[in-house]
View (cartoon, rainbow, N blue to C red):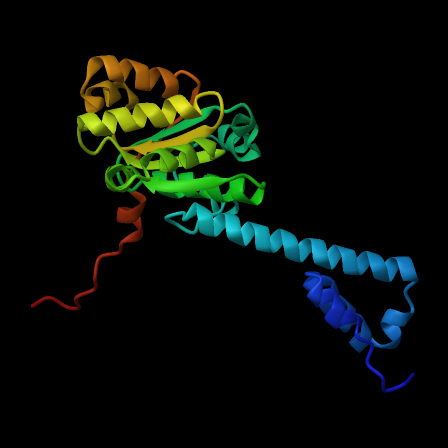
Length: 254
């Protein structure tokens, strides 16, 4: 009847189908234009809207969980600035097949070349592809693990890291590892070896990582699990931060 509102949108919302409810309400407000569509076409639009909203919610949740340091997207990747990035290599990394094969990625180079940005952009793409991702700065991760060891959460934290499809370890090699940090790193990489992908960024060249670990025996074990199945991006060139910083105009000098 004219003027009577059917409770369908409310029932859809109560069933957790808020996307369909909103789409149905929009169809009603569209009036005759919506009525020109057949039943299956209208139903298809409702289902598409529900699926799109659920995908958006899942992506939002994955990005929140990932806690990426920078808002970065592979669509905004700068391949024009000379810093050692090969277009074909980046296309391969963006495709994500290496994650399916549980391979690692090592990004090295001096500060200001965009190592963290690239890692976060690839992490963002992995989230969009439906993968579980978490970002950690290495010094803070070791601090968190030390606290977790003291209050009984250490094992649970290591298990959670082991389950990730992509783990980003940013700012690796800033200082020689303490004994507990070496053990934690070995545990993380042992649990993830052949099961997940790890992205590492470092100012330190890979050939000096052995020294940064500190203990030769543990260094061999750690690097065996990290380096041997890894892709490498070695960045070079002028700092992008420095290039983006323009000198202040102080006006005419006396």
